[in-house]
Image (cartoon, rainbow, N blue to C red; front, side, top):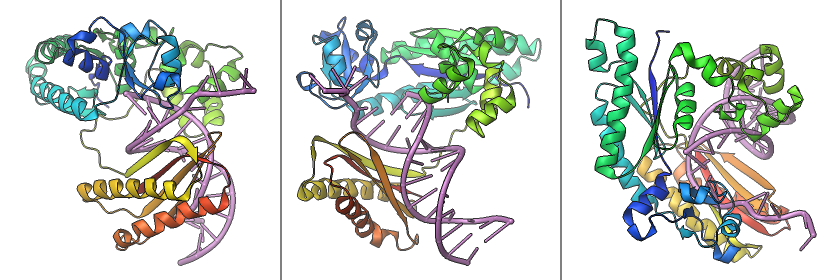
Length: 360
DNA sequence: ATTGAAGTACACG
DNA sequence: CTAACGCGTGTACTTCAAT
């Protein structure tokens, strides 16, 4: 494959920065966007918090109750997804405009990968094409951060590398409000000292497996390169091969602008665990209606219904049923309720969460 | 022998 | 006491049964 220049733009503390921008009285204060803390009794988690709040040890995905104990005086706000969606659309428009002729892949609301394949000014620079291309990308990154700051009063960080993985890790290193360029010749030295958790796809479980394998409690990417391809395949199966490649700064995943939807689902966690069939069914019917709405909007055909049930103690089970796609519409409610009923019959424990998901 | 359905595990923002 | 742990989406694995 030809050498690529890939950029990842990631908005800094997106939800929290938007809330600060909208309400000047929050400026300079720790802001936590997420579930209602309910005086420390809330059951949800932190969605995003600003850098002030991070100084108290708060971070995204942390239980909101814990965040409350770390900093009760912080501003706690509910997630206003409709607002963030509108802001995201405007940010993405700026990116499209500045990066005309490039491939742009949006990831959720606050990230976008950009592949410079056809970036016109780069293509035009026939002389010293290679150096100019990387400098051109860096200048473009600068323009993006300036335009987004001027037009939306929000900061972002940008990573540039020869593939998605390097761009992503470079972006993390640039945060907040920075730009980091990692050219191919610098990739290995850039990655070597970093912790393996920086590699996208290596989560808590994979980290522990690798700690056990190397008999240390902090594995660097340099250390990871000591594992053979066979070692990694026996530890992780098919994934092992891509981990082996990523440790060497290689990643062939393409920037793909269009993604077709493969599943749609809704879940609900009860304020208090319940076994009341009336309550369960009432909430479940609401979920089914919401999913039905989304199915309608998507105009897609689905065939598999999965019902999820999480019980007291956090153990989670799923049951699913695949039907003929032509009969899906008429069977959806009936089959979903049948699956839920099986849980109610089989399980005696109180229910913490119920959910439903449909797959293509 | 291959496919596909069901259920679980893991990851990410 | 032994924690606390949402939601939506994706990939991949294991197991078992049907074609």
